[in-house]
Image (cartoon, rainbow, N blue to C red; front, side):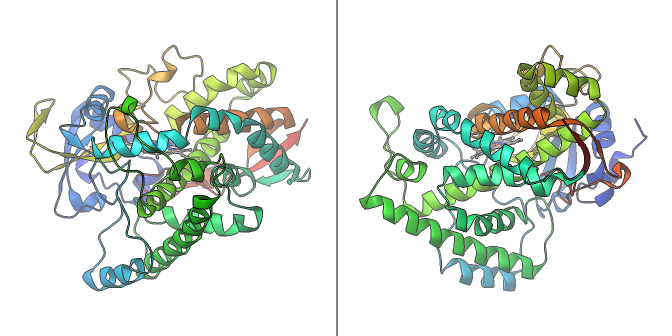
Length: 425
Ligand code: HEM
């Protein structure tokens, strides 16, 4: 580990975003619950407690009564004049509703139960043939070229198109859908210009209008698709909670959340896994020989990449973690990325070892009531993606690895612009 000074931990600095792990390690060992000024993580005025050890992150995630998910936005707070302009644009669409990710039980429970009636394991597993065909088409699109822009031509279109399948977005709207997805994640954990923020808000309204029309069409003519099932989802006695069906504003916010949560994260997982695998031809060989091993590779890839490096909670009462007082109202940063490299749980934590005994102990997909709704989908996309790549690629290397860069966000961590040189089978 390189020596670092924890007093200089600035999650928004480019240098730290490129490689935060020395800081995480120092935190786990020296200050496992470390106080940070809110400005450092885009929460001016808040006291933020960074929780970095696996055991503590795990406890925070399981205790939703003490640690609320009503943390609001992960972007920086706009100035009043900009806020006014943003509100004027929002007023032309549907007001944003905090749904699953940023709500607590019982409000969260109602959303989660209703959405789960449409986002079912059966619906996800039925996607497998389409996801496989998509992956094959994407590799065909490389046309046997030796140099491949992996993110552009595989890692990005795979999750975006898969979510577009779920939402029944027709082919001629795919490029709009991609633009909407990009705009939706533009401000997460990073600073964007006022113009970008306004553009992002306009795009949200454009997307809302398109999906509202699609939902209205299904009101009179439902089919067995996700949007119809979302529209017609009803709570029953078995759900042990009462509540209304989803309103249009709620459905539109849920659609956006699924789109945001499910695109960049999966891209990052795949890109990161490919860089690691480029150094481990023996693992690539084993994956080719025994495709069932790919599941373990995906799990270990999730642990090490942790595309979502951490999210916030707000203390609902005075609490204490490892002897550090967490006053009511302060924010806790549950650092999934650090927990997943905790040497107390994962020996040689920086090593990519798909044979680990406790592969599934990572927190890359969260834990507790907010456990990733799309976990099965993310695993399906990554597994099928790697299966197809293994069938088609004999060996590969990263182009100019020293210049690889991670995106400017302390929450969503992913490699930008990954290029590979490939040898086909
Ligand atoms: C590698 C890919 C993914 C990663 C690393 C990831 C990570 C996470 C994490 C850590 C959480 C928990 C957040 C918290 O506790 O505050 C979460 C929640 C969530 N994820 Fe994922 N996710 C991925 C893919 C997906 C996909 C593909 C979808 C949907 C299409 C999705 C939808 C959601 C939703 C809706 C939630 C909120 C659930 C709730 O609050 O009840 N995610 N995800």
